[in-house]
Length: 184
Image (cartoon, rainbow, N blue to C red; front, side, top):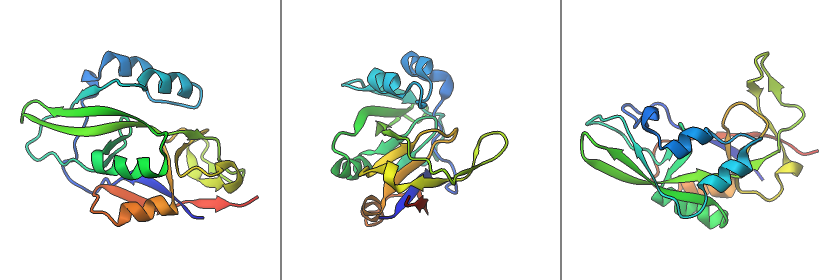
């Protein structure tokens, strides 16, 4: 089975930008989930919590279906696809608010499972950022959507069937790149 890296398409102009200086205190204290604090982070945001994130006001803001900075936010329609493959996916309703233009959009704050599936053949630069990502098929197990643990960068991975479902729908702002997978 093939796996693909999902990322936000940076070619769109006027992409919505979260105002990091106005993040809710709870998110500011937690930072972004990393391997060491993932369970604590996931427990803190799970449940029925809703978030209101202020975006930088721009009349031409573009709201893509997949936003990865500073947190993974997905549109309502993309969440339906993700949930159909990962029924235990932790998502919290998040409102993106452009106060200047009086616009609010519903998104879902996602905490994907951190999978320790980094292949031994993966290569790193001297600063420990990833040079070549290679996934270990055995360690992936039967996960469909997950985040790679053990690297500095955020890498969101989806299986071929999930990617096919995404590509059959009119989603925008998502880049899909084939991931290298080794079977050991």
